[in-house]
Image: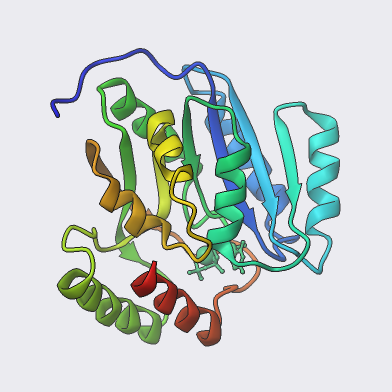
Length: 229
Ligand code: UDP
Ligand code: MG
């Protein structure tokens, strides 16, 4: 398919999974608010608390009370980032969505060039990490082995150095929700779906606060789901 020019989305939905992220939410809110003020369209924030046991849900609810474009989903327990994103995708109303980590390792300022590519006709615009600042040697090594395996055996086209940070058009979101896998590997499914895809490079920053919510146990489960899904 050749990308065909179109106008900016009427509404852009930001889908942000958050698990015990109470320390970063104030900064997330500030950065996001500033970033969307430069966009050519209105936005909604779909903030998904993935069964947080700290004050995340409470802080998100206070945020949503002070501005109608912020919406909160509270999952009943910790289901994992992939399930939290799926809940957000099912709920959101935008004709384009941006999935983004809540810890500011995915810079919200990238929304602007992502939407630019959307207007050029791309249906998937993913953020590609040019550096993995502050990530441990173990994490970089395990990611490299994982991606080599996945590209050899599962998804030949799976882009490397790409997480969940991406814009998707409404038709991709609808196609995604027609695949009802409960153990999902979203980045693989999006690759598998096809559509016009392009990347925008960004430098992955260190978290301003908090620690990773992916201990080894979760990384292994994630890898298993990735292979099976
Ligand atoms: N996250 C989540 N549920 C989980 C684990 C993580 O919703 O069970 C969220 C987390 O709050 C963050 C995003 O997913 O917004 C990415 O997680 P994290 O930053 O811990 O992963 P890393 O960047 O270390 O790979
Ligand atoms: Mg992170």
